[in-house]
Length: 341
Ligand code: SAH
Image: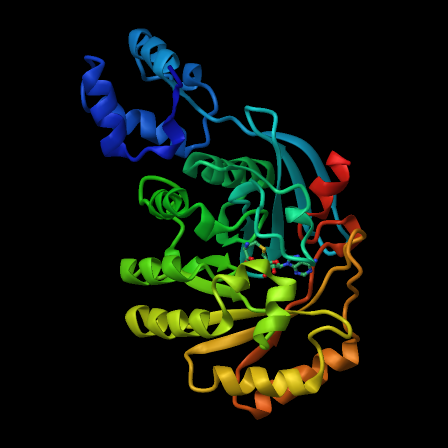
């Protein structure tokens, strides 16, 4: 029998499981408190009787995550290669801002979306991550930093909405008062635009930020960059976004990575401004990180500024994200990729 990942369970679920094993209900809260401290070993649960510890060990696992390697960049960004119980390697990134620590969490081992500029998709998708493994990334990096992590972005490897149920469970657990207690307002879920899941997520009315990796306005050109666009075209994504903002009242972030000579001309900026006009949203411009295997280079500094001005002239709130950690291959899946190679 496959052992269940106890870190993927809420208190009620743990309760049910241990009561079925003949133990008292109140123990669930104690177990959950240990798990919420980032405990990796049932034997550390000091106030739990031995018989229950043995039963836990026989029936459950804590998907322990081991730090395989840390790379530190000049800007204080730390990139972690993390080893899962089954030996798979994922990346997570810790960024320090004035207001505290932010973490970039992976949602899958690899990714099947096939975006042409992304290193995480080169080897395809290996498997989905469990809710407990997403939480585990936070516990592991939080213990390493010795300080509370306040912000979470699901922007590591993987497509969150292609692992929808596990991501939703993660969002429930990460927000729990007795758990990590990270506010949904401090969590961003980033997607290529899996349209039906955007509608489903909207109906959950969570206070998270939804980020759409748009990167192109023209439908055919976007399909050339992001293959899933064939199934979920720009128009449908924007319609889903309208619905999302209407239901949740939350402002959507459109991520736009500027690739030299591909999606960075001023006509495109104007077109982008036009299609987003009136929507509750803002655009986040990112200079693309060059990936060795692909022939894409970042746009010039001058062009980023022009692109931003053009969008602002169309009335779109626009920010420029400084890609952190590119000196350590920390940006977007490159570290794991080099490690695996
Ligand atoms: N699959 C999800 C989340 C993971 S990718 C998504 O697509 O949104 C997180 C962000 O990094 C996405 O906006 C993605 O397009 C972007 N990205 C991937 N490779 C990049 C690169 N080489 N340079 C800049 N951004 C990149």
